[in-house]
Length: 132
Image 1 (cartoon, one colour):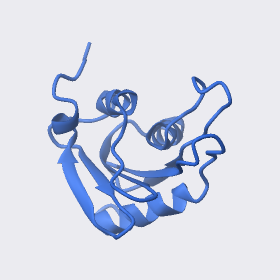
Image 2 (image 1 turned 135 degrees about the horizontal axis):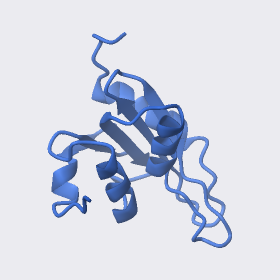
Image 3 (image 1 turned 90 degrees about the vertical axis):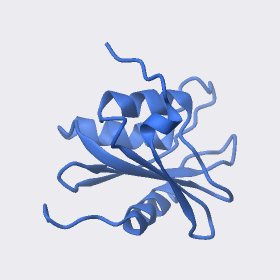
């Protein structure tokens, strides 16, 4: 599978699958994400809300956490989808993504319900990335 390139559409389908598992009783805003590792492994994540709000975790960070907990540290792209219009990662998620990728190359795919999507390099979404 290492030589097989995962298409954007395939990654979006994984994000849609993840969205169906979201726990969003407060906002009713279900989000799904699917992140692709450098060796073509896909990890799905959904948003998980909490009554304290501060303990809520976004779909993108759930996907990253699942991948990192399995030993992956390098990623190529992520697809994000909510219900309705395009959904973009929040600032915290953008910074977490920047921790594990080359912001010049990493792709963020933001999809909508119509099957349309927009692709951005992470650098476009977080131009002054904080790095130590």
